Image (cartoon, rainbow over all chains, first blue to last red; front, side, top):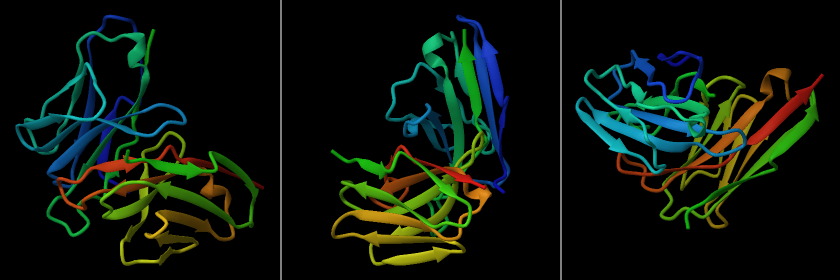
Length: 115
Length: 114
């Protein structure tokens, strides 16, 4: 069982609201990621971080922002939610110092619905 | 274009039966291929990793194969159980390092009926 937690599990919110999806891991992993997943589609990388104060945009253009002030915490923020943001958001982490440094540990996800 | 294609898109089998899921990729250079299992409402969990030199690897009732020449991998599930119902995702890495990029398939949705 992975020690990576996401809250909330489900979120229904109105258009224009600001939201923050929380992600925390207790494994001391240096690299963290946010993926977006729609039903029947592949995961798309939207943000990643190599460590504290390091954040990069992923392959999928996203209006969200992230921060990495502490190793264990990697929140994702949407300043103004829109219906097009409705999706499943998965947080993951990995440890670059291990031999299997690409093995991702995923949280259970946040299902976001914007009305 | 680097891609990962999985088949079938969905599969229904009876409990106790075997099944095989396929993954074809065009990712180059190739470093490794990993199979993940994603239960409904949960994040994916790694089942096994295959590197260039490996042909077969087993993890309990799961057996993965890799043919790096034809760029194909399969995941064979033996004596299926109800708990095997999940989406199985194939992920290919192009460099096998922190600079590597991961390419995800869309997954095969497996349903095991009693």
